[in-house]
Image (cartoon, rainbow over all chains, first blue to last red; front, side):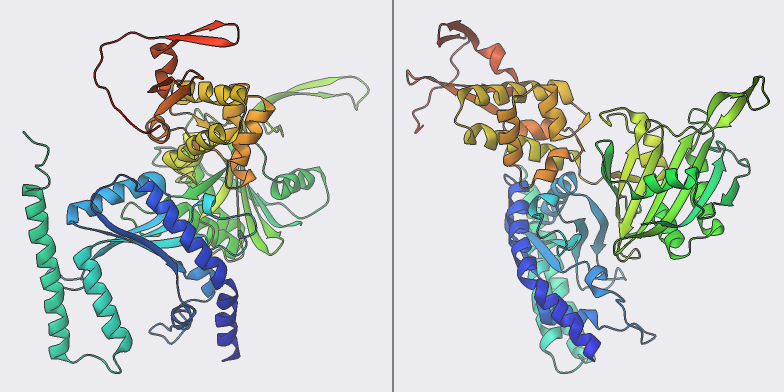
Length: 208
Length: 337
């Protein structure tokens, strides 16, 4: 247990600097995305000490710690999110990001089965840009940050879903799980319809 | 810090071959001697102007996997002749006859709190041995000689406190690429390491363009502003697709110390002055697309930065300048300054 507190204390010590880095990252991402239309928000923040601690002490199916060295193994100590209006805007933002930042992972998150509905989003693990890290911060700064690019509906669903999962005192029952999947399907449907509408209306703006 | 383990592999070209030639290998015992001194120099040496930061490329499906990196992590985890052999085989499969026979050294040890691995390849050379020990002079032609010249080897240095999750970035060297690192071997960087510069061309170029823009704003000297503006106008034509550092940019245009210092101070940190990147013309033009000259008469002249001198012809008359231009009027505006 003492070792667990050491993990938390070590992170708490770094937290202020991680928060400063997150602020600088947010500014940097906004600058890279300047001029890109239909971006609702660009945010970045350091993982809260509580969330970090919960993740750091997670165990796998064999009961072993998932992260043997959380300081280096946990790659989303700083997380950034870009929310956009339509599905095709995700690709537009993606191409800007990969042009400007070097990443070590890109994952399009979706439910395992095509007949299921749940979390959707584009995730990256990206090298933290050198420009935002001062010489004094270098030893403390993580090497990577996580970036999520999502539509507004994907984001809204994942926030509510996360809140339910985080605050619920028990596992969801079958009916509740079905309700959650239903809301995911609705969000997916809204995105699909808005994408079709934007292709027909917004995308044709400049045509004669 | 001394090398804990050192291994050598003699690698003949094997690119595209179904049955590549055998790799001869051996462990190098940690004895005092000139070979170890040389290897120690490569292992412990600090970064130089030929070195550039690299980042391993993820798998084509986007997952966090890079075979070369994994082999290096395995080697660091258990530095043995056998764990180094897959690295040697990988280098062999990327080596063609143009690169020729090479001698690969794999070194591992600690550097401060970090675990360090160095992979270094020396090309083969030919030499003449002159032996006067018998009283006379015996002369022999030697093939497969590996000469330690600071201008001839390629290397990768990678270090981290926790190699399993670290070891994504490293420092690569290609001394055969020449001074500017402009011709960094695709064979070493892409084919063998499956890596790229740690920064994208747009990222490095954006920093340069922003620093130039800030420097012009910051320095009150008109001479310095002009120097930087001229260099900026010429940059896309000069550096398109080439690798450089911001220091190289300043040196290429022979910028004054004052201009150089202002540019350096416009960077978030000094070390970025020497960081290598590939120049991206379109990104450069995005950051500072226009150049503006303001005269004491109230005239403000603006033109695309890249061809400002072609649009406005400057004629010096004493301390004054007369600008001339010709074209059809396309638009007029009333604006704030």
